[in-house]
Length: 168
View (cartoon, rainbow, N blue to C red):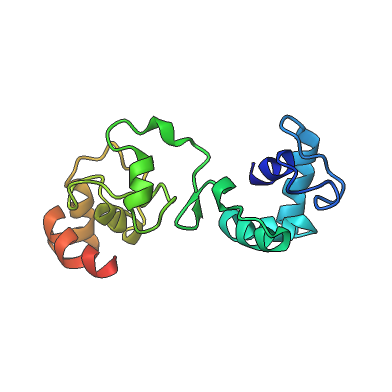
């Protein structure tokens, strides 16, 4: 999407894009571009660095500030799932407040030691829990698993205050 935006605004040319006309709806051109990114060929080598780095590098080459066109937060691209769906704690706010910006798996939530907080995401990452498969688990079940594996008994609040803060 970023490269197409730059092509549409005439910042990138067909020559820059190895002859591709990267117009919205041109599935063939997008498929070719995806292949170039995967194999780091031509413009794909720059785009493989991610939106933020590509914006900096291409912007330097073109002598244009491209960050206003780069959909990112703190250097991390925004997830393609769409941020308009966050009903209880919108991701757009979380991306601005979280340590990792556009990472939808590490969003800051309130309260800090609450179930959907960044500190609990550290627990999920440390315990190798899949965020999508653990929605239905009752709150303390993860801590029962933790005790079974480590022998340590911690509550959610204790985890957040004693362990997660150090990791963060």
